[in-house]
Length: 114
Length: 115
Image 1: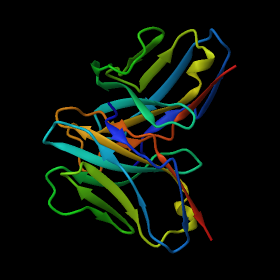
Image 2 (image 1 turned 60 degrees about the vertical axis):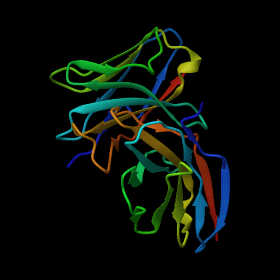
Image 3 (image 1 turned 90 degrees about the vertical axis):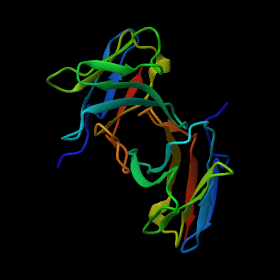
Image 4 (image 1 turned 180 degrees about the horizontal axis):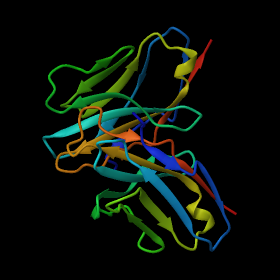
């Protein structure tokens, strides 16, 4: 079974609009962490946002927010006011309690149109 | 405050040759992780190391691949007798002993092309 599922291979959004990138996860651990990374065409991995399983508030970092629905095991990334520079691959990842490695989803390619 | 340094950025090898990929973790980070990214795919965990110890190698192919993180010097991912299917981007990440909320710092990756 897939641990991290990103069901949207590609997404389009108009500049200045908001977009939601979906991520669902599968774990039986009570303690885990969820991450989102951005990978632009240059290839580097850029950390965006983190949500701990015990965090009561949804994480926010500037224009990025994480819509964390624990019961549904979803951790969707919301990008507000999209910019052309947001065009990239976006990866959701999970770290399960007791393990330090990250498990990545297949990614969503976001294209922001002017 | 140098981040995670990987070299080379690009590496071309002929089939059957050896590939050595290097990773210097961020200052203060004692844990190193190697991931592989095939074209148009997500990153796949390969191995997790601490100084002089392999902690988790559950993602490493059983043959031809090895990794080390010596007491002194960078971590090395070694691929012997490379084949075309080894062509991929190889990322190294590092973390403190207890990964904090920022988690892991990634290097820029090494793009290996096997011809």
